[in-house]
Length: 60
Image 1: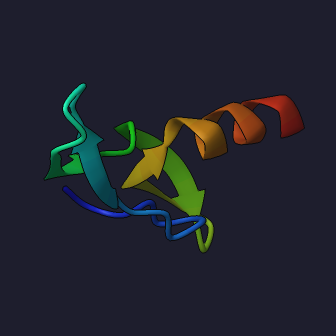
Image 2: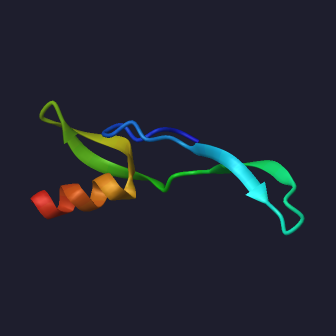
């Protein structure tokens, strides 16, 4: 899983905790989408998280 090119957010790690309190490792992946954005005045395909994508669409 890649990171967001704008904010740098990546996957987070933690534990699944069952009813018997056993801890097993798990990972929360962020929602990465490919979007075409203007980077240095040129259109580029960039991997962006949906939080940044929503913020960018509000700014336009």
